[in-house]
Length: 494
Ligand code: C2O
Ligand code: CU
Image (cartoon, rainbow, N blue to C red; front, side):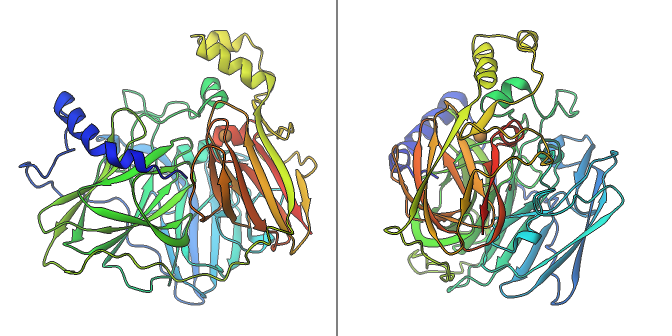
C-alpha cells in the first residue's frame, strides 16, 4: 500500500548502476538491444458468460508445462482445463452463476470458492463451515450473485490454501464497465511464484521457518506462468494493466520503466489517479495501472524494486501505428456507490496482530541460524505461530469456530485500528466489505479503498468501514502460512 516518491527519484539511477555493474539482462532493452520476442501466454481468452449462462469450473489436477517450468510438466491444480489461471469477465450489473465441481485427487480435500474483494451476500462468500458446508470430492457447488462494483478481483478456495495456491488453484474475476475513457488494451497479469527444486519438482509449500517469519518464498517467479513475459501493446496507447498478486507470500514494490503510469484502482476500487512512483503490493493486493505505451518498437517494463536487485516482471513491446498523440492525463474510473463511513460517529475497535510464544521461538531459532532440526526440537505439537487480539485460529481449515473477534451492528460506521506488533509484514483482508484507508503511523497513504491492507512491521493503520453487509466475515492475514498458523478470525455483522 505504500507510494514512495523517494524511490521514484532514486530508482533510475539505481537501475542504471546495477545494470552496468552486474549486467542485469533485459533491464535496458531499449538501448540498442534486439527487439524481444513476444511470449506466447499460457493464459487464454477470458470466459465471458452470456447473461443467464452458467460458468463451469472444475478443480482438478492437470499436468501442465508452464513456460516458467523450463520444459518440465508439473501436476498443477487448476479450475479449468484450458489455462492455469482462468479469467472470468462480466459486465457490471450482470448476474454471475458458477458451478464448481471438486475433482481434486485427494480424499477429503474439500473446497469452497471465495470471491476475494466482492461485497456479496454472506451465503455466497465461500468459506467452509463459516458460510457454507464444504464441497467434498466428487460434489459440485453453485454460486450465484451480481457483483455490486466493477473491478479487478480473484477467486480461490478457502481451506488448505497454502497447498492450493502453491499448485496454482486461483482464477481472476474482472467486472467491466468503469472506464469513462476507454483504454486501448487491457491486460490481466497474475503474479505468482512457484516453489521448485533444481530438478523442477515441487518443494514443500510451507516450512516452519517461513510460516513463523515472512512466509515461504517461491523459487521461480512468474506472470501468468511465464518468467518475464513480453506482451504486445498498441504504440502510444493507454494500456490498462491489472496486476493481481496471487502469491502466497511475495511482497513487491511495483513500478514502471520507460513508460509513464498512474494507479487508477487499488484492490479494484477506482481512485483519483495517482502518478505511479512505486507501490508496495502484498499478497492478495491488486493494482490497476494505466500506462502510456512507448512508441512503436520500444519496450516498457514492469519492475519489482523490493529487493536490492530490481527484477523485471514483464515487458510491453509497443507495436503498430501510434494510437494517441495527446498528453497522458489518466481519467478517473467511474465512481461506485459505496457508503462512506461516518467517522465522527464511528465506534473504534482495536485489532492487534501478534506472534504467539511458539511463533516467536521458531522465528528466533531460525534467525540464530537454527536448522529444521533445531526447530523440530521445539516440539511443535500445534503450528500456532500468530494471533489476532491474542486469539489464534486453531485449525488449517475453518472447522473450529471460536468466538468472533468483534460483533458489528448493521449500518454502523467503525474505525478499526490495525496494529502490527510483529517484525513481519501482514496483508490484512476483510471479507464482504472494503476499508477506507485513513492514516498510518509510518507512511503517507493515499485515501483509497482497499480490501487488503498491507501492514508493515510495527505499523498501525486506521481504516474506516460501514458494516453494511450482514453475516459472518473472515478477517485474516493473506500470507497464507500466517492465516493457517493462527492469524485468522471473523467478525459478525448483525
Ligand atoms: Cu482471498 Cu479470506 O481471502
Ligand atoms: Cu501475516
